[in-house]
Length: 368
Ligand SMILES: NC(=O)c1ccc[n+]([C@@H]2O[C@H](COP(=O)([O-])OP(=O)(O)OC[C@H]3O[C@@H](n4cnc5c(N)ncnc54)[C@H](O)[C@@H]3O)[C@@H](O)[C@H]2O)c1
Ligand SMILES: [Zn+2]
Image: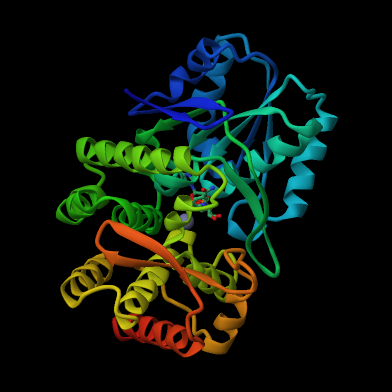
């Protein structure tokens, strides 16, 4: 097992990465001095697969547990589900000393964290992420929240967990589209922060997608480490942390126009990264060689989901709701080389439309 620490101005917590470590979650929580009834937030699919291991581990250490099941999928990442979680836990007698535990993918984790941040004005929470995407990205850094009909993740808080326990063996049961979605966010981390990591991911794509344990667990750890360092520098996304949104201004618009739940978040981000790479190149920031390398790498990721037809004007409109807007201007994360990103605004709408169009037609030509 590998251990990483994330330290912000007010909070610090361990991120544990290893295979078959879910059975230790009770003892790891005890080591941190955590006490209280555990309110587990999960979905049925994950609970059926691994719920017994989780509960046995907690009960062995004397923790009382209550479990609530939320409906699965991005479409239910809403305020209404948060209310259901809060109501269920209040009715089940949780109190201010209770601890919420998010057991599932990024959707469960984001909602569990949000519920924890407002239940009784804030209770502690722990994350045991079960998808590749949530293990490499969503569980690290304390961004919580839900979608709104007007756009993705428009409501939420910054609220850090007490512990993140990443059992890499759980991703074996994922559908292949979820492995690909997670891999896309790993590529993003490399593109914005670490060229060597990007090259390693590209070189080992087939082993990672085939879930080669050694290579994958190293890559998961590196992603968490890179993200943790960015969060430590800028927890509340005032500056540097914005680079982790590379591909997301486009991606969130695509995700919401396609209809939440149609594309996985990571799939939409993959499309968004191609659009942002095109834009970086068209605007003259990214030279041709790097542009070609990135484009080739992105198109080499075997996306398997059919992309619904989307109208460019509707996508542009959706983008206007993105919360990365500042002073009414949409902010874009662009690349000037592999491993380095920056924020840019005031971009002509024509350029954005071209990037959307070229991206969608590239994927359509590939039969997607
Ligand atoms: N907070 C952050 O910093 C952050 C960062 C990136 C993404 N996100 C959010 O994360 C969400 C996407 O997360 P996701 O891709 O994990 O989607 P998800 O949570 O919807 O999970 C995808 C599917 O996998 C299933 N699943 C989960 N674990 C499984 C397992 N071990 N075996 C088999 N099936 C399993 C789920 O039930 C679901 O059907 C988005 O809402 C996105 O906005 C948040
Ligand atoms: Zn993301």
